[in-house]
Length: 515
Image (cartoon, rainbow, N blue to C red; front, top):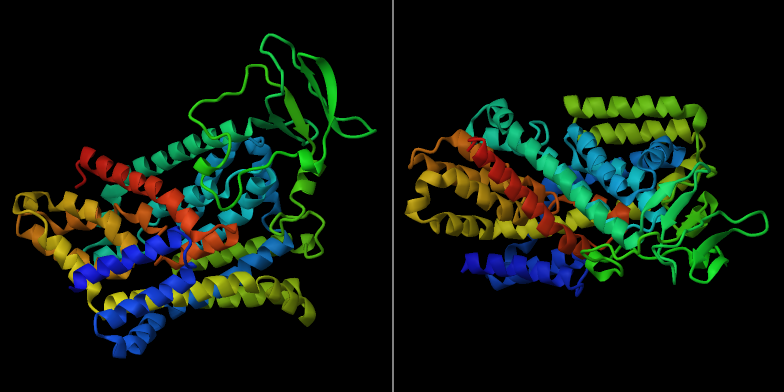
C-alpha cells in the first residue's frame, strides 16, 4: 500500500506543477501533507517535517548567503568582462552561445557545487539570452544537464556517498568512469549544438559587425534568391534597414517595436513560432542590423541585464573581488570549512568592502531578497516532501518493490539494472536516500550473482544527469529562480534530454566495459 501511495504522491506532484495547477512551493507542502494523512500517519506530520527541515537547513543557509554573495559580485561588475568576452567570442550566434553555456557550466562545475555553478552560469549568460531573445529554457536545460554529468566528481557528492555506503575508495569508483562521463559530456555539447541550431532557425543567424552591432538575418517580404541583397545601419537621421527586394531598395525604420520577439522565459521551443525541422529562410534573405543601443533598449525592462552604467559598479575593487571569489571557491573545493560558513563569511566581507555604508548594504540585501526568499522557501518546502516520503517509509517500500521486481535472470546483470534504475530513482529521491538506502540493497542483490560492489557503485552514478533537475534538488531552484522560468516549464523541456544523456553515459559504460 505504501508503495502505491508513494508513486501516486510523486505522480500527483509532477502533474500539478507541470500543468501549472499549483505552484511548486504549494505542491511540495500540500501534496505530501495530504498523503501523510492518507497513510494514517497524520499525527506524525510535524515530526517528519521537522526532521526534513533539520536535514536541509544547512543547504538553505548556504543558498541564502551564496545568493547574496554572488548577487553582490554581479552588482559590482565582477562578471561584466565575462559577458562582454563571451558576446564577442560567440559573435551573437545562438549556436555558439548555447555551446558556450554548456562549456561554462561544465568548467564551473569542477567546484562540485551545483548552486555556485548555476549562479555563475546564469549571471554570465542570461543577459545574452535576454538581449538576443533566445529561449531561456535552453540555457537552464544545458546548464543543468552539464552540471549533472560533472556532479560525479569525487568531491561533488554522489561518488563520495556511493563510496561511503559500500565502503569503497572514491577514486576506485570514479577514475574508471571517466571515459563514460567524458562521452556524456561530449553528448551534452552536441545537445547544446542541436538546441543552438534550433534557436538559430527560429531567430535567424546573428553576428557581430565591426560596430559591435547585432546583425540578424531575417527573411524580407518579397526577397528572391537570385536578387542581390543590401543591408545597412541607418544614418544620422534615423536608424533603419535598407532592404533590396522585388520592389527595389527601401528603408524600414528600426524601432524597439520592430525588434524581433520570441524566446520567452516560460515556453518550450515547440510553443514558439519559427521552430521547425528545416530552415525555411530563403537563400539570400535580407539582413537586419540591430545596433547595440537598440538591443539595450529592448532589454531595458530586464533588471538582470548588466547595465554598464549602474551605480553599484566598483571597478577599483575588481581584482579584490576576483581574488575573494577565487579564494572562496578554492576553500570550497578543499572543504576547509563547511560550505554555509564559507558563503556566510564571504557575503559579509563582500558587503563590507564594496558597500561600507550601512544604507548601501541594506539596499543590496533588499535587492536580492526576492531570490533569497524564493529559493530558501522552496528548500524548506522540499523538506516537507522528503520528510514525509522518508518518514512514512514510502521511499523504502518503493525501492524494495523495484528491486524485488527484477527477474532472477537479470541477476548477473545487476550493474546494468542499477544504472537503469538510477535514472528514475535519483530523480524521485535525494542522493542521500538513494545511495544510503537503495544502493546497498542493489549491491547485496548483485553480490548474490557475482557482481562486485564496485560495479554497482559505478553504475549508480549514471542517473546524475537527470538528478540535477529533480524537484528535490535545492540547486535547481537557484537555476530557475535566477533565470525567471517556471519550474514546470523547465521540467517539461529538460527531462527528456537529461534522461537521454544518462542513457548515453550508461551505453558508454557498457561499451568501455566499465560496468
